[in-house]
Amino acid sequence: MISDPNYYSYKKKLVAYSQLAIIFVIILYIILRFVAHVKEAWGISFFVVYAFSFYFTIKYNKKIKKAIDKKIIEIYGTQIEIKDNHGNLLESFNVKDADKIIVKKEYKMPEEGFKDIINTIKGKFVKNYIIFEFNGKQKKYDFLFDSYYMIEKLKELIKEWEAAGYNVIKTE
Image (cartoon, rainbow, N blue to C red; front, side):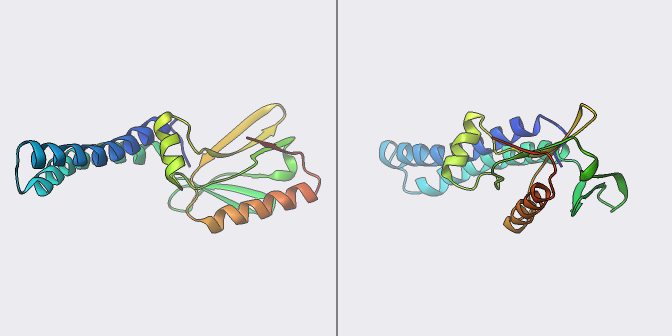
């Protein structure tokens, strides 16, 4: 689960630096090879940019790891459980008790394609969440998927909730 809203800012910077590294390798190679006539231009440019990229990757990966809780959402039909990374139950509730369940129309894996990478750099993130409303109070859970299988299982659960008559609202 994502607990720190800065996760998205860190992710943007990480993706941006990764893409900039590719551009810098090409530019540095052109300068070294064709302007300075250095035969080892490719190796030198790759090494310089790799060192730069490696530094920022480590820096932002640490921040991203801190922004993600070691919590897990487990859904068993209508039962929702929030557990810590040791499997200890932190929170539990039933979908039946929710006044509203707000879900996304489409769930995705982050940075699936080039368009998603560009959108991340622009600050348009893939955000996956579920909001449960109880007595006018909302509980929002932002999370990351481990696999496409998990996305499909969540879609099936949402269909089951809709079929059971729960107040499921789909948003962008």
